[in-house]
Length: 110
Image (cartoon, rainbow, N blue to C red; front, top):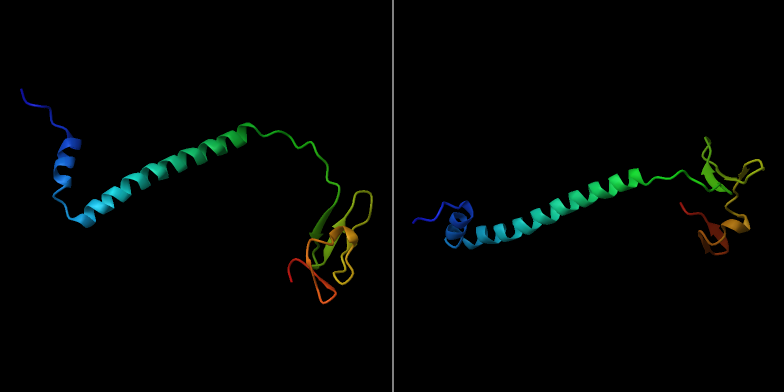
């Protein structure tokens, strides 16, 4: 009795007759496809889990640094008026976030 036709068996029987470059490309393409599909599925799962497990924020802002409309860096503290940051004489809370060069504080963007 004859065996049923198999596309995979037919492909494998002809694989060894192909040039080595084509064989190498097939050997690289298959694992790359499997890794790519795994990456897409995992990315989708992590996004779905991130959406379903979102909880409302329970913390409160205790202070922050932002840039105003004029381009000045401002520091915000609760129950205080926003203050401009003088990078030549920074507040002690911000020291350590930049670097000291020749006795002068350099901001993060300099």
